[in-house]
Image (spheres, one colour):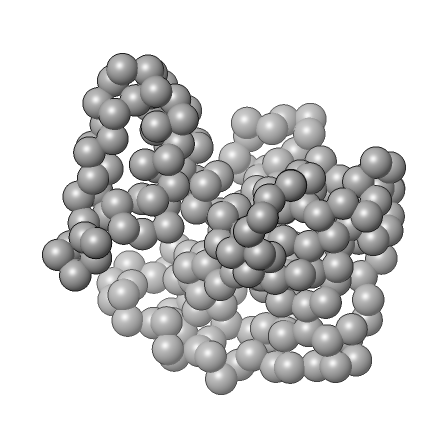
Length: 221
């Protein structure tokens, strides 16, 4: 398959395009998804540059172009496990299930929940991993993921539009859940023009809460 591969931590120059990368093979409980579109999320940039490393203490806003020299290779991952290279990144995937342990998902258009939790301990963050970080993601023609993370979707939006949703909306949903936001309550959303901010506005409204938004003047409209 065609894939964009990250061989190591670094800047944009480390990314490699391949047209002969091995197709992924689904295991039991996994599905094979043909990628329709994959979003570029900040977590992909952070993983590539090594921003998540505990060795990075200063200048965290300056490494997107070149990566961070002080990365500790074993801890520069989103979750508890290290990034193993080469890695196919891409957390935000929209596509069609074309194989694997698919059942009724076969042939369905799906959005992928990129947060991979241990079914035996779903609330144990030490066991949580992320698509495109500790596991190959959607910068390729195909991706293999747990069937439980593939959610059927019926929407008039394009694959490219839908691929902007997963990380932002999962983040927003977890925030309002942890805050126990309830109908009739008022919530102040800072950075409301960003991906998570716009998601928070909609999730808050869905819960019957009243969102007030703060955004920079250039993005207010």
